[in-house]
Image (tube, rainbow, N blue to C red; front, side, top):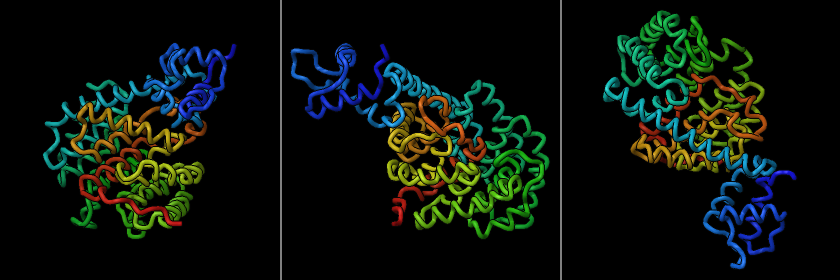
Length: 389
């Protein structure tokens, strides 16, 4: 006998909820009664609180889970929720362990750094010690502590090459200071030029200088310069994605970073871009920079807008329980980070996720410099422009 599918359960519960005669096998009825999802005969038919919860869970992810056995879907939901909490607990540990390390002006950014470290899913004690060592490397470089924290985060993501790239990074930082003075941050930009999207001893400095004014955002320009250094066609992809987003979201913030992320995805970026509007609308203004947040989530997970939004809401509740941040917008940003960090293999039946693979350093840049910085600068509280047309 074939197993009962999630779709069969969802359909049966939906019919009962609508007051219509349900249709389904005796096995479905027996399962739902045994689990307390519907009232036991001879009581009038209707959903219990458990049934309403199960229906809601299955409805938001129906396009993916309907064909799957209900037991597998139930196990997946429980395991994924537990994993989100475990990663949030690791972030809680990093906040406590590294808090004394971070100067006061940079301390609020430690929350998103902690989430990034937790997403590594490595031994927490070893990772904390690694970050301390990297912080010592950047601390002597001077400048704003918030800028140095970004550099430390990117260096900690590539520990095996950090010491090899470090001397070049110091030289690039000095070169930025000499050419631009105090007009732009130097240490974080140097780290981006050497580490995003992947490590390189030769910073694409001239490429960055050539494009920084047109792009209008130094860090996005540094990222694009790194993409173009590795693949000259990335420049055309970036411009195409940015033009599409700018035409649809006039005045929206974070579009250069979103376009760079889509350009890094290569050919998959075009299909991913088409999914952004639905997810941005579903996430709403309760999530900072919803267009950029949607792009980030879709750069890893080929899930429906309703399911991704549901996972973000679950992660927000976990972030609140773990006291990871003091404001709702910050918790929403950390929720985006936690959901993005879930392995694509976690979601059975999802097609296309494995082709979406932006680099880890690129992800950190989007979360730190794009999404989280907008909150702390007070620029993420006003509504994003609605799509045009």
